[in-house]
Amino acid sequence: MKQSTLRWYGLLSQLVFALIFWLINLLEYIHYYSFLESLAYSFSYTVLVAGVTIIHYFYVLPLFIKGKKWQYFLVLFGLMTTGIVLFYSYEFLVFGEEEDPSTFLLSIAYDYLLLIITTAYTSLFYFVEQWSLTVTRETSLRNEKLQAELNFLKSQINPHFLFNTLNNIYSYAETGNANTAAMIERLSSILRFMVYDCGQDRVSLTKEVDAVEDLLEILRMKNDGQHNIDLRVTGLKRFHLIAPLIIVNFVENACKHSNVTNHPNGFINVDIFVNAEDICHLQISNTFTPKMNADAKYSGVGSGNTKQRLELQYKDSYQLEEKKEENVYYLDLMIPLERKR
Image (cartoon, rainbow, N blue to C red; front, side):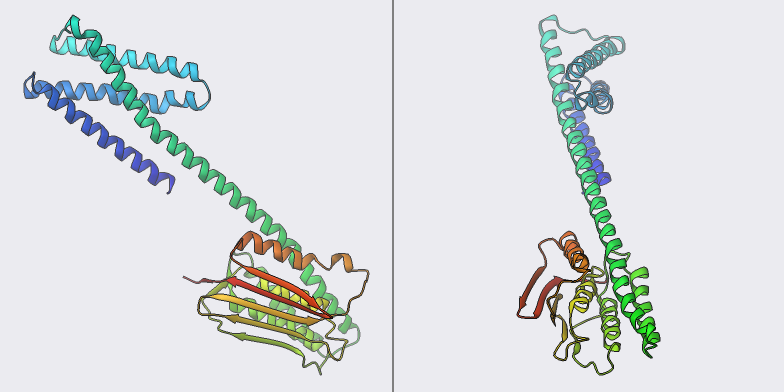
């Protein structure tokens, strides 16, 4: 519940409480005084209780919250005593009413008890409001922390992806490959997606898939006879939304480690299927050649960060399985999609 809504309900309930309190006093006094006198008595007594309660709520109760308990109880007792003295002085000066000595102490005890009950009742709303405010702040801090972590992970992923792809293009530019210009055009499309779309929490799945197609096409251009890089997409709708750079980076990681460009039997297969329940099913399989090289220590940056982002953004709502059989790597990811409103 929003803080403003909670405060509104609290004030409304306390106004209803004050109205009921006034009516009870009116019905009590009307047995002993005229109707106008009963109105005056009940109104003045309600003002007494309301005044003490308001001062306690805004100025005295914070002492208790700050841990100043002795000061709180002393100030509260002084506030109640001052309110009761003012009420009886008002009653005597305006109505000339004198208290019966035999019931005076009982009346005083009744007034203290009533003020204790009302201040305790309104304190409940104060504590609930403070609790709600604390929860809201903690939630906001958690969200800010998560967003900072996501931004940090994205700042690592984007250069990682860019460096890998630029290295590929550079090697072919040196040899004057005719596909270099087309590779740069595809890379430009991917970068536009990263710069203009990936700053949001969710992006269109169609744009994510377009970036995957651009990425795979760059890889195909390395070898004009390359026919074993496949992308199959089914069930995709334009209203489907997903966290950015999830699918792209898993595919990019497969491209980086695959031996598809230098092995006759190498392959990369990417299947993206969206079912009727708006669950995106990503399956990747690619061949690889186990080896150690100078860049081995960097090999897990993109994939590792993507898994962290999955955990941060989808928690327990996704399923990810990875396995290696002989020289083939398999990835199976199921992730819930949102719908564009």
